Length: 81
Image: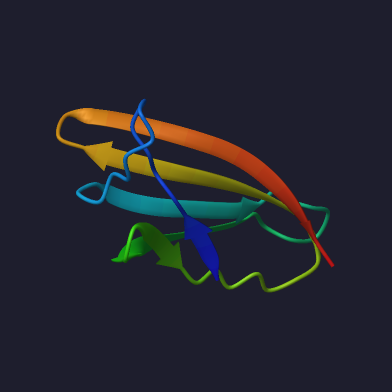
């Protein structure tokens, strides 16, 4: 599982956003790209989502935070082993 804590500029938890987690593995020789999206659910003051990382390698993750008309995306990558 992935846990996501969102805070405003004074450190107060934001608990009224919609959060989506997109994760993907780029195309490799003989294998198409894998792209997935899961909603994150609020649990207390943070959001959680379960990612099905099906194989080792480099995965790209984009966390989309949607609050009203504002959309903020945080991108990172992980190396699954």
